[in-house]
Length: 89
Image 1: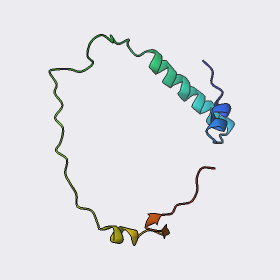
Image 2: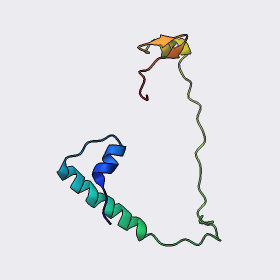
Image 3: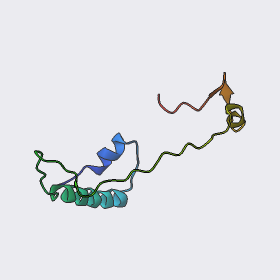
């Protein structure tokens, strides 16, 4: 299977050299090959092992700093909200 790595890079707004594109094409082929070799799963049964129960940890409440203490570290805030640069147009 062939991949148009430069097109994928353009969609992801990335730039690759021809050498990097060739390396990524090999990696993509390897990933697709691995996925194609995954075993089929029977969707009628459960995928969980009933003999292996998962023990979840207890949630720990960690006291946080008061808001005014946290806002001291913010470079730019308006009306108590953190202002960040626009990243999406």
